Image (cartoon, rainbow, N blue to C red; front, top):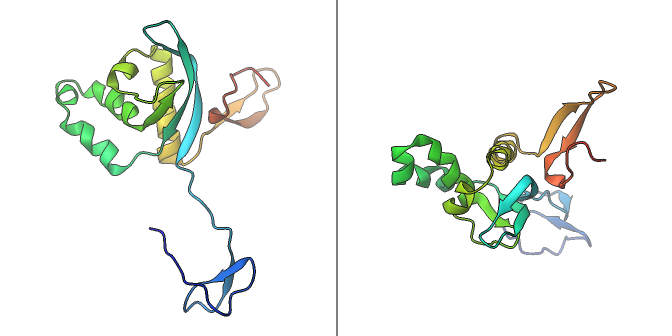
Length: 154
């Protein structure tokens, strides 16, 4: 919920004062990141043969997780839940703005697995970082899965 505050006479340039708080805070508020870019390992191939790899996934709402439970395809096969759920939260895949369950059904298995993990990371863990270990030097570090970089590339 966003609160709006009327400016007060005590307000200084670049700060705002919450009514009744008596303390000035910096105007730059922490914002919630709700959309995350990704790049599929293989890519979705549409009917014309175009490969779509980059996309955007938004955070899921409670409704996104509840509505698929009423879907007959999910009732018949619980494994279909992830297909419906993923299709609800992907806002763009390449030039495709209408990502529906049929699109997700046609993804390669590795891309669906990637999206399921990506969904879990942004919705449960709140970030897109993954801990990895270098196979050569055994150094531990984190990579950002949303950056679009391919594993093994620097």
